[in-house]
Image 1 (cartoon, protein in one colour):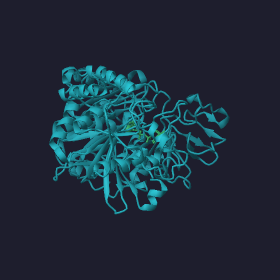
Image 2 (cartoon, protein in one colour; image 1 turned 180 degrees about the horizontal axis):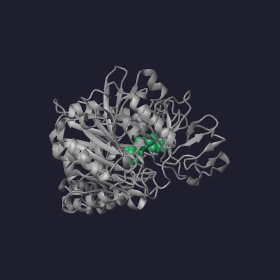
Image 3 (cartoon, helix red, strand yellow; image 1 turned 45 degrees about the vertical axis):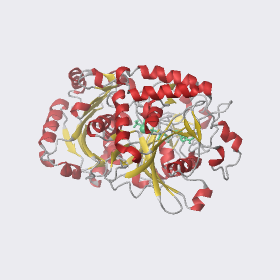
Image 4 (tube, helix red, strand yellow; image 1 turned 90 degrees about the vertical axis):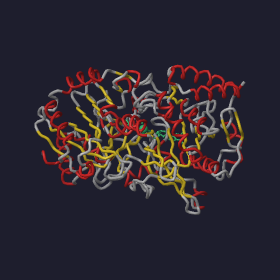
Length: 596
Ligand code: GTP
Ligand code: SPV
Ligand code: MN
């Protein structure tokens, strides 16, 4: 066991973890198929996972979490910087000394009778100059098997790491999955994450939100790069040129869908294609030519299952057809496959729901989510290589040059379908003030409007005032090579509460306008909030039942609504006190003046 690496910092930390957790066995995950196959068999034998229909879903497994453990828990997530000030007003904070003591008390001895799995992983293609290494220890095979899909796992990570101390320590202990003792803690100054009493995705796959966003955002601030809650996609035009965009939407607001979107038929026939680089997280650095380059640090998709179907997201569904782990969806007992609301119009007659109870369609009441077969935040963990539209750049590690950054969220009435910010600084204002109606991706009320700057509210590992300044500084460095910044809203509703814009593949019509703006090929209307399309410039070809008047109804910028919005932004900004960059206050004053 001791010979899996010679790195003294790794060996010392593993010894500390062993002494703390007292496992009966220690297993280093080397990434080999034999080892993984043995772990899958073990998880099936203990009931931790269920093997699905090998013919219909080869290599696929099913897992149920405890009903009290189905989403991220923001109220139990802490940024433990040495100074409280550095966690800022949007994060829970605790003194690191105190928190280490508390967490060690909770975790102490909890691996007794169990195995400690050591997972060496890389965020980003191994060896890429933009990649970073981590080691997670866990007592859950489910976590191991998910990490193997979501990150690059194996011995090579340690070979590339050598004797460096630049790696992130991640301790996960399932303990009793007790929600009262559940903590998800980041120690940015120590490159350390500790997660106890959960076994749900974003809380325990420590490479994802804990490392690739909370720790990495802090590292990016210190080292001059950016870690963002963004999808990355490439749009290929009929001439074969590919332009890349990155988009930040809050959890469950459409990143995976946009990242894998299929353009409408008339555009496909012309030769337009969309390539997926990433669906959740982007690490971005200024490249040798001065442009902003992005990599996807992940290796798989941890996607929302409900609503995913052949029409809404063909590529995501295709990605789940092999070697995928399904969590908290329903099982169709007739053929041992999976089902969720919105998969198709044939709910299984003989199913087991996500809680493990018998289920059939007669039990379903649309207005009552507790009658659903799948949990609204049920997920699939699918290897990126399964995705039919995965970009050829995905695995290269050099990153892709970003032409446009897009912010967005769920706003029933406020933001128009799309608008362009006036410049980078104004774009930072747009991102810093964005808001969205909350979803099932985090525990708590759903449908409440909350400010979620750059979709990073639950994921920024330091003071958000400093984070805004970092964005402004990056813009200074990028100068005229900075990506253009846009905002989209697929979720405007009519008087009956129905979404007006068809969304999904039809979002391509909006992307084309965005790219045309980046290339200076199309005009726009200047409004107090930025540049809005002329309705005739959004191509509505073949869009049945949707006319230009309907389009105009979602391109409006209502002065009363926005005056109220400006007042709410002012309120939101108060939180940041002295750390709110003066530039953003100026931007807000400009907006108010333009609306007056
Ligand atoms: P996380 O994985 O939590 O970060 O979520 P995400 O941002 O990747 O969201 P995802 O693409 O999984 O979409 C979440 C929900 O939004 C699904 O129920 C989709 O059906 C719905 N959705 C996505 N795109 C659109 C759209 O263009 N229009 C509408 N109306 N709904 C959409
Ligand atoms: C999100 O909530 O933004 C997710 C899922 O992508 S989780 O891994 O739980 O963070
Ligand atoms: Mn996400």
